[in-house]
Image (cartoon, rainbow, N blue to C red):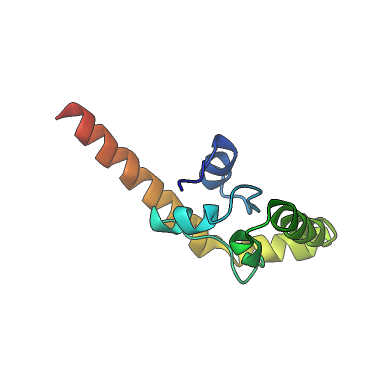
Length: 106
């Protein structure tokens, strides 16, 4: 019921990189509930809702393959179009850390 969002996702958030989640069903749904944004429609994230593990993983790999096949210029343009998402996620991450720190200190 609670997908595991691992350090590989957080590393991409911190370093402002595009990412495709290969994980449990609804991992991106939980990611959004934590206040983060992902990259749909730049990345087709409908795979996150697929129940069958094999099908979800294969659909996410298809999206990864599409990104790999972009030229460097196309990928850079794609990444540049996501600057607002990177900024939002950085601010959200910093705020969540601040709230956790405050909670632990209280």
